[in-house]
Length: 308
Image (cartoon, rainbow, N blue to C red):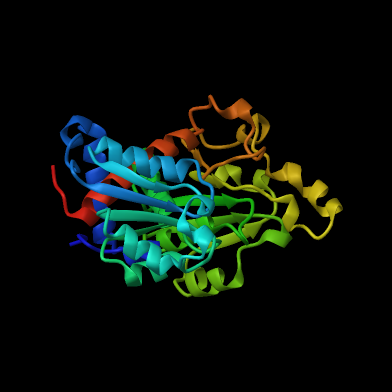
């Protein structure tokens, strides 16, 4: 059902297709040896026009664990883009060498352009501030694996909700599941964009509220999804200094949280989660990284149409 398709936007996948990917990822987690050679002879191209640690290495690790090979580049400067080659020409060339590609690009819409010119599946690995669909798949698999469901919970989204592509994608994705309540925690300057509220939350009659402090709501949360509050987004230093400590999760703030709440973060973190809580069983952001590799393994298999 998914063979040969592209993944540009997390909403490209139906709930049934998401379940197929997550069920396959679950089986990979339980029976990794069964998948060690399913992609033998297949090649993944990683076309990364801007720096990445987790996403690029996660894709490469996923393909290697499936028995396949990887080619590609990790910056625009090390590709023919430095000579002025278009995205369309690059992907047409790569399609002569590889069976599937993952592309990260600073320009919004670049992976979509590539998909229109490509004979192989294109996976959007992040395009500017627009979409990051495999991070959304990672988040959903993590929640499903750790909470046992993708419905009936309250999730707090904290930090930069205005510019955070991971937050926007996750809200859209979770809006398709039942009885999800969103608590949006941010300074006034970094509130969720109106179009997300109007086109997703209000339009679908989804419960949500906006607050400025984690302490007000942490006891209500089943999941806390942290993101970085960025100094450069503020108009003046005073506002940043006034608010920045409100968005650092530490032991004191965690004291009033539920014992089974989970803390997620798309990473990299700077100082918004104190290292003192890394050993708390509720801190699940490094588990989240590992789920990202497993979900990419499942996605690669589905788009290539290979089975164990």
